[in-house]
Image (cartoon, rainbow, N blue to C red):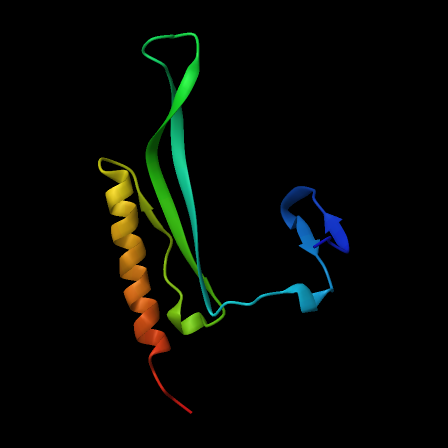
Length: 103
């Protein structure tokens, strides 16, 4: 999908388009970002070959303001376990919200 206009300078950077029939809207979306650092290979210290996770953040993006939550960040040990624990917590919250049958 190509943008119609892009203004990518300063604090008011903006990307917009008007071909809305290409959109696939979701009620809820989790956006995650991992932070990693690179380490040299033990056998060849001149080659940087390992990405080691140092933390992550997850943001719960949705259209309904009443269900918005703060950005969840974590830095420490067992990063992947903590990441998946948080994902499954979010899944339970989203399932509970979507299970309401309200007119």
